[in-house]
Image (cartoon, rainbow, N blue to C red; front, top):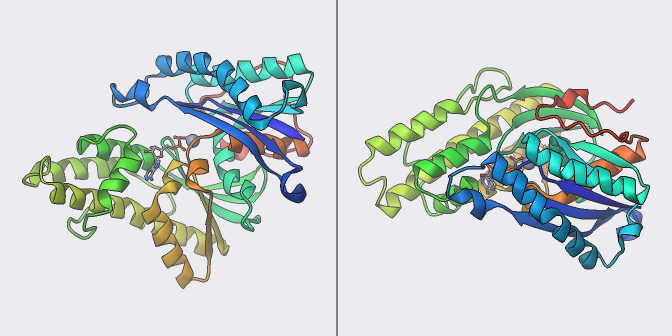
Length: 344
Ligand code: KG4
Ligand code: ZN
């Protein structure tokens, strides 16, 4: 079975074919293409929703042909279409949903709308590496920071989430304050590599308050640190130290909450997913801390942590296999509770 996955919830146009016959029937990604709108939005320092929608429309058809070429298949070989139905920017979501729904109708195959965060959550499951349910998942992206207990596909219990900014958003804002280009996460991480993470003390928000997160205070703390530190805008050593101290504060907060969630649930398996799960320091700290409590952490390769079409194809595949498919109407949902995803 070959499933086309379409991701257009924000600023990446991602298309992929997931094929369950690959790798001796274990399944795998036959081909994928990804177009990032980073350059388009960089001038504005963040995503401009209307520009994002227009660019998805421009790119979807040529990328689809490129994908078919790469996979060496015809469109008639596609058995089903999965597209991101939410959460995300409504205009951007609509482009992929309408393209996908229409294509599926033309081909006479099923179509299914997928929850973007379920796509992220299932990406490390798709890439193998022995990830089995149940597990605790830390979902850390540009728009979400959540701890979820996953007992199976669609069986999600939210254990905690950010009451304000997401971790990725916090990285992006800190990057802006450090005059680093958009998107901030990878650039802050790069600058932090040569810095001393103990150089400056930054807060660990809500550490002792359950499993929720808050990152908006961190923004103010970084702003004040930059304002009060001489040469914060010019001295490369000072800048690297600020980036490293900031990254450590976010990572340390995430790690401590993950350990707490594992202890609370009694589970020994943690999965991290979403753009921030590509962060090397987060991965290393989790490996170190989880080792102490005899737990393990799983993550996808970096290119499958950030937005991509393969994770949507795979989430769609899991749902179709469970007997789900959507009707002909297209209804995208900018906000969508993960706990409502139960498969009947
Ligand atoms: O999952 P994603 O690609 O898109 C959303 O669903 O939001 O996540 C994007 C977020 C951005 O905030 C980006 O700065 C952050 O993930 N990110 C990182 C890294 N790579 C991407 N943050 C920290 N370190 C990284 N290496
Ligand atoms: Zn995402």
